[in-house]
Image 1 (cartoon, rainbow over the protein chains, first blue to last red):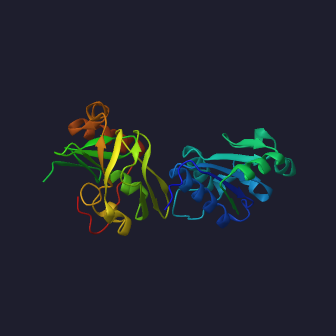
Image 2: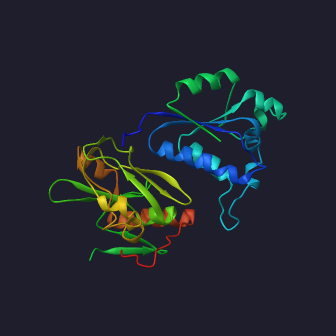
Image 3: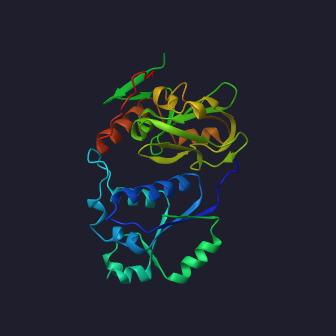
Length: 126
Length: 155
């Protein structure tokens, strides 16, 4: 199997806090790719945007016996050098600004996602 | 039998050299290579390991770079090499039976043997013996870490 080191993966997350079971896996895959030394970005758009609002991700907990919340997953992803970026237009749609976002999240416009898609080795869409 | 210390249920073998930050250990071998693996603390934090993917023999790594990717049902992450060198041997058992890492982190569950580049220098930056026990005790107590063991844990 080819060593994936250095390849670029773009993960697009369109699901948010309304659908908790659709939130953990994209971050888990992103962390797996980062552990394999790939360059990984998770792009949050549409409903995916709302999990980045301060105080929101802490309330999403798939396993009530675990201390791990969606906030934990987001922090673990960032600690693994996964880049988290939100779509500017989606932010506006959710009536959010940069000050509403958890720390460490970048903001990019719609043209950026096109450029990123074209330059990525693979795009995963959720 | 290696001298070992039980720190709140987490086992530390005093003859090994540790990177406490990355939860890896190094055992120098007579042929000049070193064996590298995950600590008991690492396997406990990960939980039952489902897959382990180790880099190929011949891979040249700087310390701090991953030599393996390990995943459990709750965690996925890299195992970072604590020394500079080249992978000389891969423990093939781990690929087919990744939970050997949980059962035997310090013996049967080793990951790779490395031909090191600057071993003395790298070992000087790690801890061993009582210093390792003290460093792990501080980390375990500060972070409230525990080491869950599978039923047939060997170390």
